[in-house]
Length: 309
Image 1 (tube, helix red, strand yellow):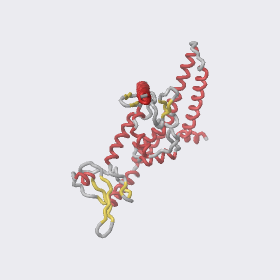
Image 2: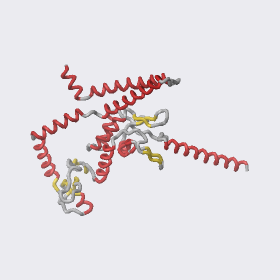
Image 3: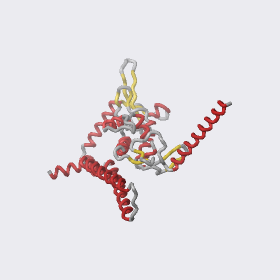
Image 4: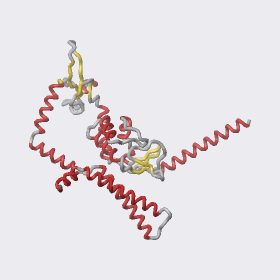
């Protein structure tokens, strides 16, 4: 009987503890606090368990989204991030699965989610909504794409060639004839899978040579050269995401310092006031130093330095 009573009490306390944990996690979620688990790259958790933007790693998240939106593969993004020395919150290397999860993680647009609780703008946003939406569109498009490469051949026009009859992708194919010769060609996905298009196959060498030749002719025209020069110049003028993020963090730090000074002027002083002020001043100095270093990397800054020299 005693054993049964003890087992019943243990089960009761276990159930009660689980309920308290669930209640506590729900209360945290309603306040958009961190509820354990992996911290997404680009965020840190502060002492009060709220999400904060990691000024060092968040710019790499933006670069990953921009790279994918501009046509880079996930494998290429993994190589790029590892080359820059980016790691997870546990210090692990970046993998394909990590980047795949990153590109669809809605936390980067400020959405907090825990079970049935969803809060828009519940955490700081890292990725602009327009960029996030563009990446999701590209992800869906690439799901429908059969492959960028077939066998050992690199088909230059895969994901770039569309059927003039049905508008679907035309992707690379290869086959071996009776004589053993390998034939390489492009084929409309509509004709390949749905038999909804009667577009004939196109020889790989012929269409690729044609596109490359016309592209070279177009690139060498005076108008195109002027357009490319203008695009390059505008890209240099565009402030990189690292500098944007650092300036935003610096502005937030300056605001916090000013608010603290106003509180001191009004006589609101606590035991932690001095410590908090020292922390904010140190953060401001560190951000200023990082900002100077990033601005020195800018091509326009280098150009100005050379002109002064």
